[in-house]
Image: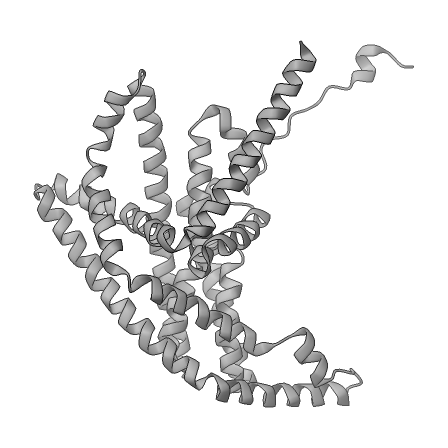
Amino acid sequence: METSNLLSREIRFLIASACFVVIVAGMRSAAGILVPFLLSVFIAIIFTPPMFWLQKQGVPKLVSIAFIMAVILALGTLLVQFLGGSVAEFTSAMPGYQKNLMAELRKLIAWLNVRGIDVSEKMIREYLDPGMAMQMAARTLTGLSSVLTNALLILLTVIFILLEAARFPVKIRGAFRDPEKSLYNYKRFTRSVNRYLALKTLFSVFTGLLIWIWLSVLGLDFALLWGLLAFLLNYVPNIGSIIAAVPPILLALAQLGLWPAALCALGFLAVNMAIGNFIEPRFMGSGMGLSTLVVFLSLVFWGWVLGPVGMLLSVPLTMIFKIAMESNPETRWLAVMLGSETPPSVEIPDRTDSAGAP
C-alpha cells in the first residue's frame, strides 16, 4: 500500500511538472496576446478600489466606470506620447553618450594604471560594457511603449473586468457548494492584492518623483525618463532600484563627469533606502515581501516568457501568486517558501535522549 501511494505521488508530481511545462510554453507562444491582458488585469486591480469608493459615495456604476476610464485613457495617452518621443531621442543620442563614457573610462583606466592597478580598455569592453545598460533600459521602455500602443484592447479589457468585479461575489455564491468559505477566500485574496498593488504604486510614484526632481537639479538629460524608469522598476524589490540606477549614473558620468555621477548614485541610494527600507515595510508589513532569490528568478522567468514587460510585471505576478497560496491552508507552505520572512523555528526533540545512549 505504501509503495502504491508513493508511486501515485510521484506520478502526480510528474503530471503536474508536465502540465507546468506545457502551460509555460503556451504562455510564451501567446505573449503577444497575454501581455496586454495581464496589463489590463494589473490596471483594473489598481483602479478597482477608487471605482468602489465612488459607488459608495452615490455615483452610479456606469458613471464611476466612465470616470475611471477617462483617467486611465488620459494617463495612457500621456505615457505613450512621452515614451515614444523621449526613447527615440535618447536612442539617437546614445552613440554620443557612449563615446563620452568611454573617454571617461579611459581617464579612469589611466588613473588606475598610474597607481599600479593593471586594467586595460579591452578588459573593460570584454567583461563590462557600459553602453549595454543604457541600451537595455531603452529596449525595456520601447517594449512597454509598443504594448501601450494597443490601447484599445487594453481599455476594453479593463472596462469588462471592472463591470464583472461587482458581480463576481454573486457568481461565487451560485457556483460553489460552500459559497461563504469560497467568498471569504476570494475577499481575502482581492483585499490583499488591492492593498499590495495600491501601496506599491503609491510608493513607486513617490520614488519616481523624487528621482526626477533630484536628477533635474543635477541637470541630467532625460531626467523625467529616468524617473519613469525608477517608478516602473520599483515594483521589483531589492534589485529593481539597482537596475534603475545604473543607466542614469552612467549617463551622468558621460555627460557631467565623475562627481555629478557620484551625486546621482547618492540620490538613488538615499531615496531607495528611505522608501524601501523604512517607509514601505512600515505600511505594507515585512511579511508581504519575497525573498531575494525568488525576486531574481521571477525576473528571469517572466522576462523570458513575456519579454521586457514581463520583467516589469514579474514581481506583481509572483506576489499575486504568493497571496493566492496564503489564502489556502493546503498551499500556505509554498507561500512561506516564496516569502522573505523566516518562520519561527520548531525545536526538534533529541532522539538520543528518549532512546538512550548507544
